[in-house]
Length: 221
Image 1 (cartoon, rainbow, N blue to C red):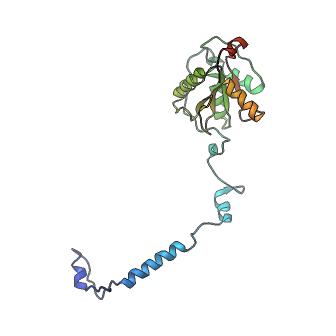
Image 2 (cartoon, rainbow, N blue to C red):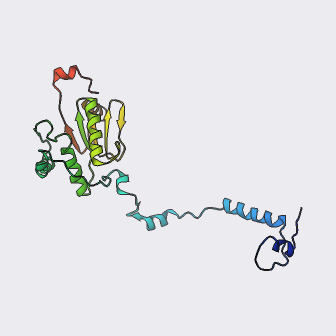
Image 3 (cartoon, rainbow, N blue to C red):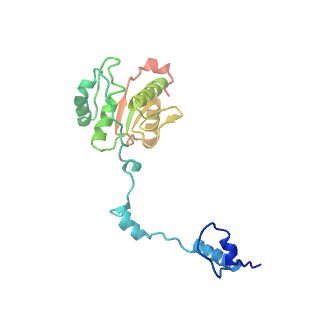
């Protein structure tokens, strides 16, 4: 059914405006608009072809993405002030020794900062170089791995499982962006058994290794 409105009827709809003349709103106009809308939906979208994507948004034929999303670089780190611990004064010397030797043994008193600070020395060293690293620190007990990871994450002012995480048994609090992870020795050994290699980690810190007698009475995994 067609409806025709006069200029006087339309002008009454507005408190102010210009004069309307010879205006007709019919169902044919509505149908035509519906047809135009449906044709736009069925028409191919204006998506750039592969060549234009490569020319406009790529580098060497590859689409650009954030560096750390590739898993090759460390996410930006917040500023961190190292606590006054005995091991802090030897920071540069320790970093140099670790970077220039495949195996380094560090001896220090309990509470000197071996477990919490040395891995962070390496983390910040690679961050300053804009290089990627993936550090794992082993602990003989679950409570040790989880509590230390929480403490380091708190000191770093980051959420647990982001930059710093842990893995004990079947519990894992880590993401693809985690660069410092604490885990039990049993979990690391299981990774070695399954993968036959540990190339996913750039640095491995074996901390507080248990003796054979103690290990028999402790469920490290």
